Length: 200
Image 1 (spheres, rainbow, N blue to C red):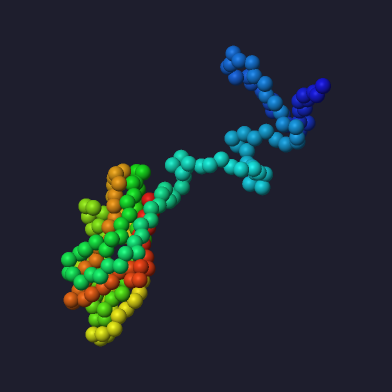
Image 2 (cartoon, rainbow, N blue to C red):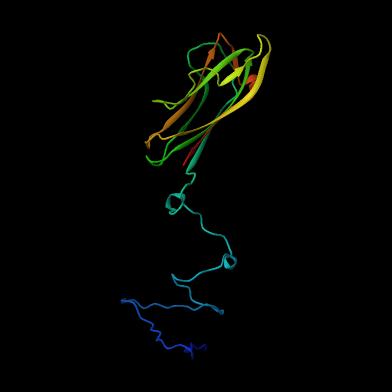
C-alpha cells in the first residue's frame, strides 16, 4: 500500500494550510506518479514541457491581441472584358464578406490583369454597395503613354482599408472607366484578376 508523506521545509518559518472546500460531496484527488511541483495561477511553465495535441482555439475568445485576421474571402474572374467607356462599369470582379463586428475593418487587396492601348488611361473604382471605397477621378491609374500605337500588357495592385460599420453582408465590386477614347481589356487570355477581403 502506497503512503502519502507531508514533509516540512527546515528553512521555512511559515505554515502551509490545506483547506477543504465547502462541499457535501466526497471527492478523490489522485496525485501523479512522478516527481514535480503542483502548478498554481502564480506558476510558470516552460513551453518545452508541453507535449501532445493542443485543443482548437476560437479566435473570437482571444484577448490582449491588438490585431487579428478574423476571416478572409477571395473573389476571382477570368472572363475577358473589353472596355471603352467613360462611365464606370463593373469588370465582373467582386467578393462578399459579412463582418463579425461593427468595429471591424476590411482590408482590400486588388490585383488586376489588363492590356491597354498606348497613350490611353483607365480609372479604377471599388464600390461597397453604398460608397466608393476607392475611385480615380483622373483615369490615370492604368496609363500607357509615349505614342499612339502599341499595347501594354501588365498587372497592377491596390490596397484599401474600409470601415463598413455593419454586421450585414458587404459586397465589394470593381469598376473601371476609360480615358481619352481609350480601350482596355481585362483578364486577357483568361488570366485572372482577383480581390481579397480580410476582416481585421
